[in-house]
Length: 531
Ligand SMILES: NC(=O)c1ccc[n+]([C@@H]2O[C@H](COP(=O)([O-])OP(=O)(O)OC[C@H]3O[C@@H](n4cnc5c(N)ncnc54)[C@H](O)[C@@H]3O)[C@@H](O)[C@H]2O)c1
Image (cartoon, rainbow, N blue to C red; front, side):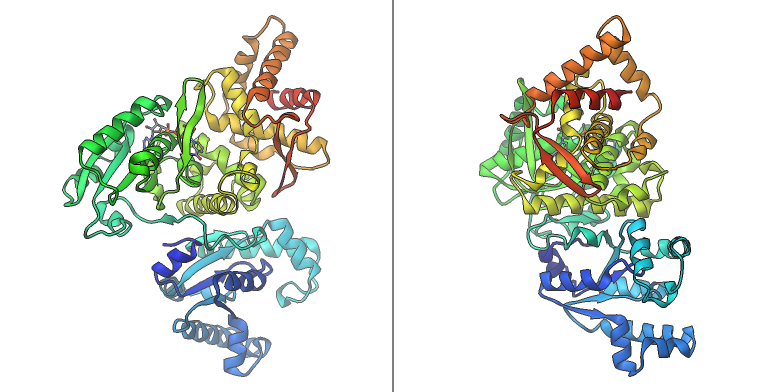
């Protein structure tokens, strides 16, 4: 299983990328751009059929759908011998289950998806496609829904999904975010840099070590295994003491520059393990194996490593990318449900700043309740979005700041409430509500209902009791609470000499960095978000 990194595609011998998706998503436009970025060529299967059969698709269809589907299948099989091709598939190719599996064996199958409203507008405006010709907008919408219902399960079989409106993903510098089975050492072996020789050690979150005992017992029997070092659960482990202890243990065990560290855990173990890897002998190779939803969609990608200092979070650290990030949603089966909110906050963030199709997928259903294939697609897509943004701006001087959407508000809320009182993901959801409110005051028209769907039921009680603890009357306590929040925002490292730096939205998937938000705007944004 592979992602967009061109090096990985080459290493894995991927010679073809097949694009599928509803009519009108932009397979041709995107396919041509992707082919150009990879230095490959683009092939439209319908045109290929016309060329080889010396008849137009319409003529073939006129002889009956079966005739056309047979020609389509034949053409598809022909492509299995072509190298370095991005191939746009027609609607029927994935209707044949056996052919779908063959396509997946012969290349990377990518599903393209754009926001539904945009797709309907495109199809209605451009009346060229026979299936949609002459239809009213309402009928076009109805047809799109019907097609989606029929084809959704087929598209879910794709290796990767992507919104082509985001452009071509970074193909050169993006991180290697790979999906694969890691339930046993067997599954992991192929990811090790040199399985026959490479020595490796594991840094593992204590709960992961306990919940996946069998996997780690298997490690102990590996010839090249140096040792396993557990990290106590909790933010307290992102400390100088924990860093020193791990570094000492690894050095005493004879860990060498050529060896590899495997870091299993959520953001805490990932940040600490990554920092150990970046400082040990001036930096050693490491793999991130995220085991929380937050780590899969956020912290394991992007190469930020670090520990906390008594004066603040993440104040000691480095940028040190993992060799690969390997994810397997199987680890989520043991993740306590209250931890899922942290990943959910970040997932919705990607929906707002980059890919609104994510918001559509989760409009009515919590992430934990969507089907496993959709979960995998969403995780992969979020991580690919982050990898693409990071590839464009590794040291966070521009676009990477967009990832902070909602976070300046969130950090203030976590700080004033007292770290640990409000889960980070919950604070991000509330922070995004506030940021959307300011965005809408400045001309955007963005809905925030989806945030309400994902907020836990008891959130209002938590917030009310926090606010009430700040004064006697409701008005007085609310004002005082908001005053503290704005103070905390002013102290945040993202405050500039001009004022507080915020990420707002001009529109969905159109973030903007501003630093001219007034105290009054902030006050009203907080009143809205806390209500
Ligand atoms: N480096 C970055 O770019 C970045 C980005 C965002 C957040 N972070 C950092 O991430 C940290 C938070 O990470 P987190 O939310 O993943 O929390 P975490 O690492 O503390 O994990 C949460 C809890 O889940 C347990 N756990 C982890 N995986 C499990 C599994 N599969 N089964 C059972 N239990 C499991 C852990 O023991 C812990 O109790 C913070 O320190 C934050 O600063 C870093």
